[in-house]
Image (tube, rainbow, N blue to C red; front, side, top):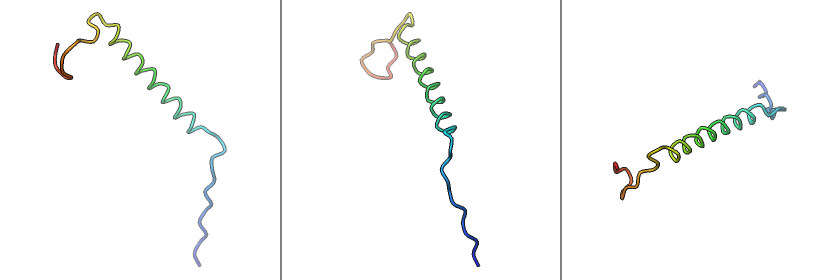
Length: 55
């Protein structure tokens, strides 16, 4: 006789959701810092006619 499969139950806490949200917040802070470094650098964003071209 086959054994019954265990019932899958939803987690009662939201540890995984909180961990994911914390990781996303850290990534947003890193991206924001990187963008600020480029925009406030002495050379700024170089103006070139085509993307990937060296100024």
